[in-house]
Length: 71
Image (cartoon, rainbow, N blue to C red; front, side, top):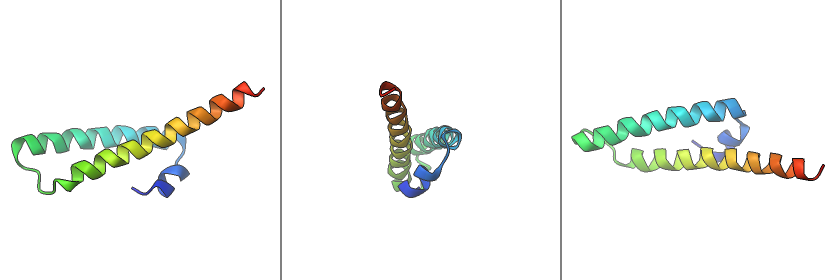
């Protein structure tokens, strides 16, 4: 997932994407533990996507917090 796509998402879409990403990460970890993981790079990509999603949410919360302090 590209950061430009993530920035365009609404807050609700971001939260849904985080939930989906966490479920996918769980499935990938189970596959790795069982030895069924076909592409180990998926774990790294999934982890980075989750970090990008959390980054955008954090930035929006910080922006909203700083907007409220100025008033």
